[in-house]
Amino acid sequence: MKKLLEVLQYGETDIRFRTDIDVEKHPEQLENLAPAAAFAMMTSLFGGNEQSVLAVIRALSIADLAVSVNQREMISDFDEISKNLARCLEEAKAEMVKRGVKILEFGPGVAPSKTKS
Image (cartoon, rainbow, N blue to C red):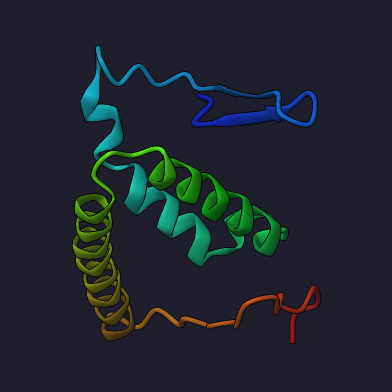
């Protein structure tokens, strides 16, 4: 197990970040991170506190953009990369359905039933 990102707040303005990923030494470690995170977010692996987790991720992204010197370029890159990832995920989902895998979709904040029917 590796720590992708740990964000701890010790005081009003004392926020600290930790990760086991060393991007300078091993940039390839980030290659599959977005698809793996998207897969976890699309399945029960997400953990049940999706709204809060996504809100914090968005706050971190907004903070990153706020201190960036090339906001428009970053937003453009995020837009293009996320469109490509969404397309790939949809294609993978369609292929799974074609192969007979049953996929159940739940809207935001809707959890699957705890009992089997």
